[in-house]
Length: 332
Figure (cartoon, helix red, strand yellow):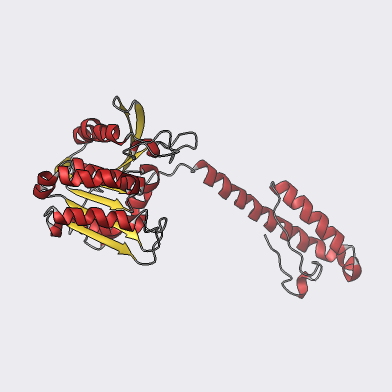
């Protein structure tokens, strides 16, 4: 708290003196009282001590009130540290396939409990970080009439709730064993979990529309999204692969495009794939363009695929852009 040199009535205050509330109001007042007393007993103020004493007490009372209010504000902030957005539920599911637990952050439409409607579902990889971003992104798109009411399901590891939990994206989102990545290569099991355990659970618990089901992933999550599209492109109606890290699996993915030629050709699913112009060409834009070219050569319906380069975008500035324009494309 800063008390300035207001006017001549406060001339007993030292010039340019700043006061900071201490950890307790009692310490705060004690410190100020000592400082005021010292000021009053020096120079021209010394003879006016009695005259100014009442004013000093009034100021101390006001300072005490401000400090107490500030402490109450901090206390309230601590008491309300667990913030849960409206219409949000938390579920926990165990996967027998992966042999691990997953946290599900679920956002329901505002009027979900007042209707019998079914809703599209948006599944988010990296749910611990992507869920709150999607929560706001979806609202903005709905304000602009770009998106209907949807259910959002963030698939997480609990790191949104506790720093004691461990993020296992390296295990779950990668397809092959990566150099210096001991846990990598569990993508196939994670896909089985989504197909046979997660989606049936969500469909049984909530009023979902199985014909409108979207998956959103970025980086490793984009890699997994692309793998899902190439191997299970009837599982979702829409796929958003933001800056997919397909470089290590490029040859494998190119084979999948050839092997699943008929499956891809007949697919009605829509694919949005993106990258930033400032991202490493070798790791991102070049492999991505090769896969997109392969899909176009397989006669995949061009109106169902959209590739976008975000001008001036780097790897860590494009997650929200991929989500925004991906959802807009899938639901337009």
